[in-house]
Amino acid sequence: MALNKMEDFKFDGKERLPVNYVKGIMQPVPTCNIWDQIWNFQAKSDDLLIATYPKAGLEQAEQMPSPRTLKTHLPIQMLPPSFLEKNCKIIYVARNPKDNMVSYYHFQKMNKALPDPGTWEEYFETFLAGKVCWGSWHDHVKGWWKAKDQYRILYLFYEDLKKNPKHEIQKLAEFIGKNLDYEVLDKILHHSSFDVMKQNPMANYTTIPTEIMNHSISPFMRKGTVGDWKNHFTVAQNERFDEDYKKKMADTSLTFHFQFS
Image 1: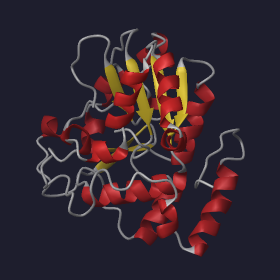
Image 2 (image 1 turned 135 degrees about the vertical axis):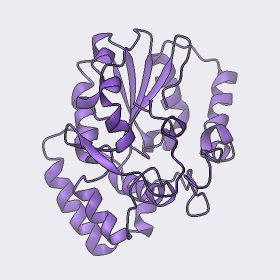
Image 3 (image 1 turned 90 degrees about the horizontal axis):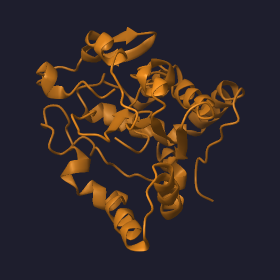
Image 4 (image 1 turned 180 degrees about the vertical axis):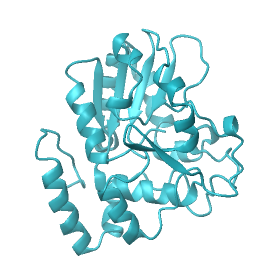
């Protein structure tokens, strides 16, 4: 859960946060320190949870009146049990791993609350090995995909949100029980578009001190495109990635679009 706000642990950004492991998954140390608190978090039946792998297109649990909208990057096996016990509605957004890797790399470069990613070549290996905060991308997306038929989980794809935002927003609204008229839908489409959100301080994280998130290294909201991985992957890396992907995704019906035709 994003219950670990920067100010809660007086993080000044002078050095990068150390990491440790909880249940075999790498996490920033402050998260590890309050793990019992996170695991025992009490969900309410009308909570709406938005779950993603980091940099999958949606980016802290707030003290809110009900119904609350909460966000998490946790893999399904680390989700506080109360969310499933209370049968909360959960929206999961998945993004193709090549673009996700590129986006996460740039995010780690600019964000001192996460480990230094090193060079692109080094990070490529780190990501494939799943040695990043919140664990392996492959396990994350597959775990939530497998759970979607047992619980109230709406599984969305970032690429679909980019290609046909109106259809995906209508699907989402229906899932949470909202009936949107055309005027409201158009307003949502406008305010949730990448270019508008990039300029919105409520969404672009520019209110966080530069010592922690340095937007001159890379903006929090960078490109938001599908297929940017082609500007980063070498031919050899792409071949290696595809081979690794084929093995790790052999046991799932989950498929992704790596570019728009």
